Image (cartoon, rainbow, N blue to C red):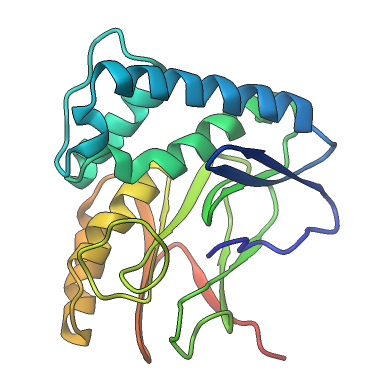
Amino acid sequence: MYRGFAQAKDLIGFEIQVQETDLWVQAESDLSLRCREIVIRLRDELESYITAHPEFASSLFPILPSPFSPPIVQLMASSAEKADVGPMSAVAGAIAELVGKGLVPLSSELIVENGGDIFLQSRRPRVAKVYAGSSPFSQRIGLKVESRGEPLGICTSAGTVGHSLSLGATDAVAIIADSAALADAVATRVGNKVQRKQDIQAALELARSIAGVRGAVVILGGNLGAWGELEVVDLVE
C-alpha cells in the first residue's frame, strides 16, 4: 500500500525523508518542521537503544525491553509480543504512529504514511489504495475505513513485494488495528502463515484472534479474503 492514500482535497501534503525513513504526511497545515523534529528524535532513540541492545534488531521473536527503554522501543516490543514476531516487524508502523500522535494536537485530520504503513486519525471515511505486486487486484481495489476521530493503523506486509522479511507467499496482507505498530507486526505474522490459497481463511482467523485488530485483507494472486471493519472498494472507473 505504498503511497496508498491519494492527496486528500481537504488536507495539505508534504514529504519528510530522514535516512531510511520516508514519510508522506497529510494534515490541515504544513507541519513539516515539527514532523522532521519528531522523526529525528525517534530515530536517535531507537538507534541508540539498538547499539546497546543489538539483539533487539535481529530477533525474529518477541523480546522484553529494558524497563528504561524509550517509548518507541516499548511500543515495538509490546506490539511484537501480541503478534508473536520480532520487534523490528513493528518499526515502520511505530514511527508512523508516534509521529502521528505527536502531530495530532496540531491537526485533528491526519494521515501519516511510512513506506505503506499508515497512521490515520480522521472524522470522515478515507480510502487506501492496495498495492499487491503482480496480483490482478493490485492498485485496482482500495480499503475504505473510518477511524471516527480516533487513532487507527493500516499496515501491509507481502512475501512477493518489498524488502521487509516475510516467510509467506502473499502479494499483500493489509491489517487494520487500533495501533499502527500493532497492525505492522500482525501483518507480518499473518503474512507468514500464507503459502497457498487454502491458507487464507486460517490467516484471517489468526488476525481476528489478536486483540486490537479490527480487520484484515489477504491477497494471493487472484485470491482475496477479507474480514472486519473495512469495505473493499473498486477503484477502476
